[in-house]
Length: 178
Image (cartoon, rainbow, N blue to C red):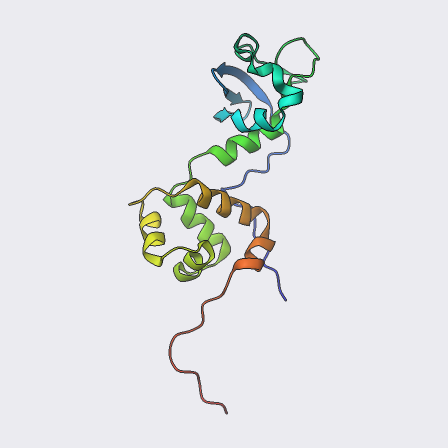
């Protein structure tokens, strides 16, 4: 069995050393980050805070949450006491931001190009009608968040494609045996 390996796509950004220029917070659980590379992201932290409630529980206090600052040589966001436990590293903030970015028709087409799937194969992989896939690609319909998650994850982990991709068989009658 041959496993496809995809080159890094625009849909995934593996910046392993992101640095924070500025950070501000908005209640209840949103941070706005400007990165040193000039990009800017709004990151919703509700899920991250829920998953890490014991360590980051103090961030439920609005007076603490609204006072973030860049820390650890601009590689993290920190709240509360300097060098305390209320810290989220820039790498994970960048990953959250990338997952939360909108996924539009051009992103879907880039995903399809990277995977080398036809429209029928892509719609089969996503378990949707070809007509629905066509509406997403044309921008006529909004792409559901779960589809964005699957597309991005499949580029990070090609085993997902190997596990669920079913190549389309050519149409027509089988060729005669020689």
